[in-house]
Amino acid sequence: MSNLATSHGDDFPEAAEKNLLDARCLAGGTRWDGAAYHAGYVVECSLKTLLLVDALAHRTGSLSTVAAGARGLLAGDPSIRNRIQELVSPKTFGHRIDRLRQASIGVPVPPAVAVIASGRMARYLSRALNSRRPSRIFGGWSETLRYQRPGVVSGAEARRWCKTAEAVYRQAVVRLRLDGVVTR
Image (tube, rainbow, N blue to C red; front, side, top):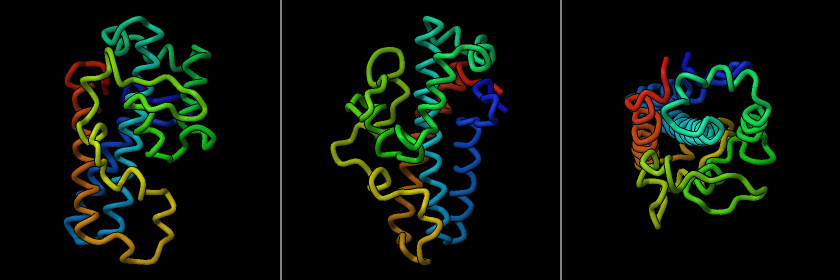
């Protein structure tokens, strides 16, 4: 469990890692639909980690204070609880990684949300997010992919999605861990 685990059990950085391992395993077994499905969750949870850390840093005043104060703020601060609800609500983001990407790079997303594309969080944004031609994972992935017929995602597309997911995860979650912001 990370220091960002919520009282509801949501733990975005841990979920990102778990889904990355699943995506790798499924891709290694040429289970392309499953690999692509889990790659989408890697991106979703990595971006939710960034947005949550940004909200915590905004509340505490700096990234360096997030690790020490995260659990208390997650439990007791109404503005942080509201931000968590915003991150998981289908009305704002839910599983919409296209909207999460937009919010992360500064594109206005309805309803209006804080963005992290500049300032203290910019170093955690992957080039995959800022590309002029972003991966199709941002527009083609959906949590309903699990209900689609087998073979809806090709091996080549699944490999690209997994590569994008890995890049987003490494730039966001791994860097936040190395900087001591996200801890276990």
